Image 1: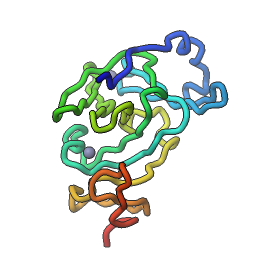
Image 2: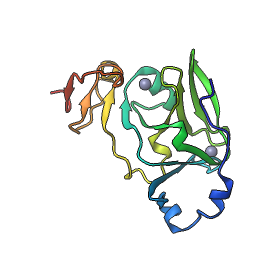
Image 3: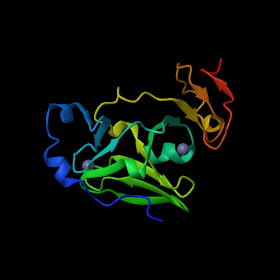
Length: 174
Ligand SMILES: [Zn+2]
Ligand SMILES: [Zn+2]
């Protein structure tokens, strides 16, 4: 299964270098365009339209992938997504799970799993403008680090938030 698109859209890149691009968002053909990049900017991407969701994941595998207490993702469809520059490599953290990163600067870039065909889950920290897409929920809070809490009132899911899952609560634990 192909979970990561080949570089494309270079023609689009050359005429998209205006000030709107520098802000990380612009409107093309009436659609919102969101851009992101790794720390060294060797890899740049964009997606059009709104993400499917924006979630914090508290599972151990994601924590290890980003070496931080929580990993935050922007879930988009592959058909919304394209590279503008460069291409990451990946580490297969478990069967069917590819974790993409920049080979130059080491920035984690994305997650793609066989469980989520047709999607790429971009790391929120790669967005050009982190204010653009605030989180919509928390996944895998059953694995959350006990000393880590977020004071938002978003839904918390014990495991995955997909496929009809019901949140265990909204807001931080008391
Ligand atoms: Zn890089
Ligand atoms: Zn996770």
